Length: 286
Image 1: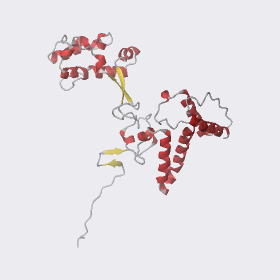
Image 2: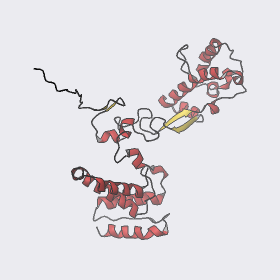
Image 3: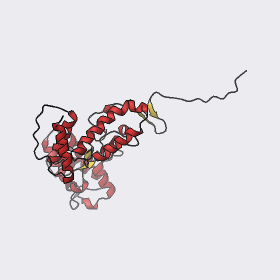
Image 4: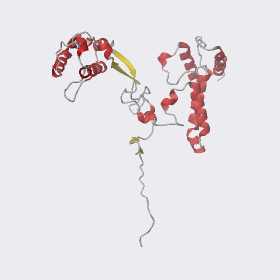
C-alpha cells in the first residue's frame, strides 16, 4: 500500500548563495577584504575609492559657437575631435557655428556624453576621461588636469571594496563600517564582540580578537584614540605618524633596540601626555 505520509522536497546548495537576493559568494578568504587584490577591489574604481571625471562646467564656454565652445578641442592635442563634432551637429540639425548656449539640453548631452543608439558617438567627456586614464604621455594629462575633478566612487562609496566584501557582516557591521570608527570606539566594539561569542566561536576567534584589541590599545595609549582606522597616511601630522610607529614597535615587542624620538608629544592633548610617558616606560621595560 502506498504511504500516506506527505513529503516536502527541499533543495540545498554547497555554494554561498542567496536565492532571495540573487547573489553568490566565493569561499571567504583574506584577499576578498583587501582593496589591493583584484578579488577584493571595487571593479569600478579598481580599489582606489575615488574616480576622476571631467566637470562639464569647466569644459564649456557658453558664449562661443559649438565647435569652439569646448576648450580642450582648441588645442593641437585634441583638435582631431572637431571633425566628428561637426558631423554630429549636422546630423542633429545644427551648424557648427550655432552658439553653445542656444543648443537644446538634449543636444548638449549627446555631444558631451555620446549616443550609441543612433550614432556611433562616444561623447566628448567619456573620450577625454579615457584619454586621461589611458595615456602614457604627460602632455595629455597636463592639458586635461584643469578640467578633471576627483569624486568618491559611486559604486563602493569610497570603501574601495567590492559589494561581496561589504556584504559580510560581523555583529551587524561590515569591514567598512569598522574602519570608519575611531580607534577608541573600534577597541570597544571588539571588546564587546568578544563577550558575545559562544564557546565554540571563542576557540576560533579569541586569539585574533586579543591581538586586535592589544594593537588598538597601543594606539589608544599613545593618544591616538580619535583617529579613524581609514585615515590615510598623507593626512597625518608628523607627531601622529611618529606615535603610530611607536605603537607598532610596542606591538612587535622588540628588545635591544635604540629609539630616537623627536618631540613625540607634539600636538598631544595634555591629558594624554601621561599615557604617552607610561607607554615609553613600557617600551623601555620590554
